[in-house]
Length: 131
Image (cartoon, rainbow, N blue to C red; front, side, top):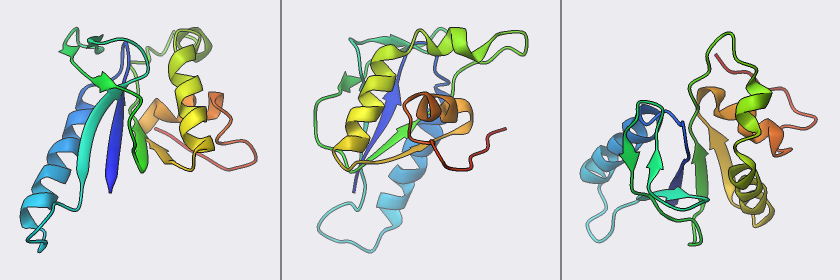
């Protein structure tokens, strides 16, 4: 399975790298002698590098390669901040999420990454929750 983690300006890098590390370990303990079950990449809808919430630069791949599953991490959300103002900065990412879903790519999110899925219309008519 080819899994892409979407890096974008202000995303929480831990929500990308904790899962890429877990899948690396899963590949190491898998009983698959010839190939790893998970091919993991960090991708971006816009140019790279991307600056994560903590100010760290993430050198992501260009987004236009084949993936089977897209994982959208959350972003730093200050309680006094309106999520709509943050989402207005993510137009490319929201369009990329829509395009992935339209191609049949499975899409999931971590924490407030659900806001981007909602804005992309993937949660319309569905129940969803986040912390």
